[in-house]
Every structure is written in structure tokens, then in C-alpha cells.
Length: 443
Image 1 (cartoon, rainbow, N blue to C red):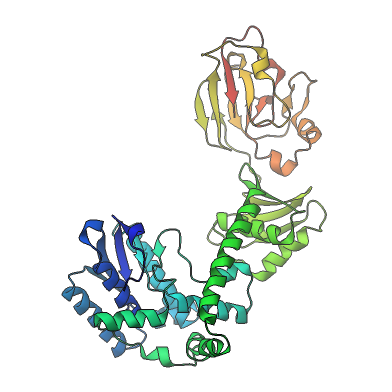
Image 2 (cartoon, rainbow, N blue to C red):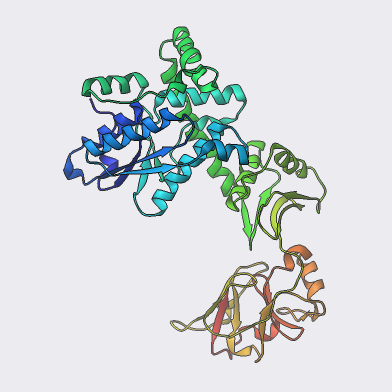
């Protein structure tokens, strides 16, 4: 009996999460039984949580003996989950799960395996679907048990518990039983022992259909998430979400903006506040949770967008010497300078620009000595391309660039004279002409 298609694991370093239970023992045995010419390097990891006293120690010793008998390297990680739960809060199950996954990811990060394989199976998926439906969830929650970024693999997701037990019986595999698995005061155990069997009585194959539903939900959610992320506009270090998106895409786009900057401790109240900004006046703000950082993540209604921005304070950036030659500048926002035209004719037409273009074509030799890269300051003046001299503030206002955003744009200046606002406009004095020798592009 074959539990899974092993071809995708050819040549990989596989570490099996081994609890000692029948599911993980069968998974380890299935990998151990693969032909040697598949080039799979097999190991195991056991996490001892310190929750079940002597029984927990028994499981650890069983895993040691099993791996020794099967000649499989075993890594053991021990944590005092009750103590962690007492000091940090959360349920015992949640803390134990966090400890396990931290151990798995640390193992992969240390280069000891390409990924960790866990023994989650079809029954686990069905249980998770029912649990989340009862608790309240959306389509994203129906993705149930998934693989995580290639670091965790779940080879048995289409295999039922009955099939796993049949595999263990056919191969005479030893295993240990976790006594808490029979305790139906735990929600998941009650679903496993009472609710799922009842569903099977109502309709034979209900478990299989729940698994199929989870797979369809995952596929649809991934599609909607891609659509939502395609609608996000990125400007400098900001993300802009259109307020006229359908609700289902707006919510996903906002969540993507939060997660991309490492914000996961948001609440339903935070999400409801984002939704209220859709109907707020331009300039309305909301703050978001950011831990262990000296700045804030803020969200602003600006025009037809919800803008996710970082509040770093209003201090102007330091001067960075500007060299009119090939180079990369990373502050105050990244841009490059590159000489062009060496392989073809230099023409003024090549340098035509429009408002807001990311590329600015310039005469590199027209920049005076002593120019620096910085952000805007009071008193800055610019003579824009083919236009009249004016204050930089008025120029940016005329271009409908908000004061908040304009403070982030790098400028190339000498004193208060501005020769380029990167990503926006150049001064007339550095434009490309028929006399230009070195044409450059700033982007």
C-alpha cells in the first residue's frame, strides 16, 4: 500500500515530525521504505512539550528507540510548555503548536533539512473545516491544513485515518497512544469522535466531501488574493488600496498590506476601522499596531485610495553627495543614475518625459558641483522643465502631490535650488539638448 506519491521528494532532505503516534510512525516508515535511488536523505524531529508528565517522556523514549532501530537520525527538542503558557497566555494547545513550528522552522533555517514533513491527514482537514465553520470564518479559513511556504509539507492530506491504520496493521508498525486524544472535553477530540461520525451517518463520504470543499476553497481564495494584490499600487514605501474595490477584494488587499510589513497582531476592530475609512473624508487617518519599533504604521484616506504609510516623523534627511554618473542611491528612497545613449544616437526625442514618469532623462554634465541628494526643505525653489520658476511647495501642490508624500521624494539640490525631484520632474537647466554629451536617466 502506497500512502503518497514520493516523486516530488526525490533528492530532498526530508525531516519527519515524529510524535510516536500511529500517523507520524506510518509517515516515517513510508519515507524509509522508498527506493534508495530516489536520493532522499531522511531524518526525524521530536518535540517533547512537558505537558503529559511520564507519558510524554515515554513517547520521547519510544521515538529514540524507533529511530535507533531504523537507523534514522533523530533531533529532540524539549520545552516546558506549561510554564510558557503560564507566563505568556494563550491556550496550552496554541502554545504547544507555536513551540513545535518554531522548532521545525529553526531546523530548516539551520540547513539541517529542506523541509519538515508532518503527518496531518484527511480527517484532520475535515475536523478543521468543521471547527472553523462552528467558530466563524470566511473562505480563507476553509483552507484548513495547508503547506507553509515550502518549509512544511503534508504528504498525507488525501489519506484518511482508516487508511493510515490499515497501513500500520499491514506493516506491523509499533506506536504509542496519547491518552488525551480520547478526552472529549477538547473541542477537536469531540469533533473527531462524535461530530464527524455523525456526519458520516447522515451522508456516507461526508468526510471526503469536506476535504474536497477545503481544496476548492483554497483554490478560490488563492485566486481572489492574487486579484486583490494586483490592485495594490506601490509608491515609494507605501501601499495604496483603491476604495472602490469590491468588498471581498478590498479586505484581502488591506490584509496583504498589513502582512507584507510584518503586522499580524491586528484585531477585528482594526479591520473595521479600515473599512470605515472607505467612506471618510480625504486626510482621515487610523493607526495600526506595530510592536517593538520606534515608528507607527498609519493608514490614510487620500483621494480614491486607502494609503498604508510609515510614520517616521518629520525630520528632513541628511545630505548625501550627488555624483552625476552611474550609481545607486538608497536613501531617502532608492533610485539609480545611469548613463545612456552610448550605443546609439543621442536625440532630444529620447528624453521626452511626461508628468509622473518614473524615468527622468537629464544632461549629466549640466548638474553644478556641490549637488546633494536629500528631501525637500522650506525655501526650496525649482525652475521646472519648460516652465516658470516657483517654490517647490507650489510646484508639488500644482502636481497634486500631497505634502505627506512629497516629504519622501528624493531631490537633487544645491543650496535651495532644486535640479530634480526624483520620479516627478527635472529643472529646465539640466534638460537634454542638442549640445548634450552625456545623457543620463534617473529612475
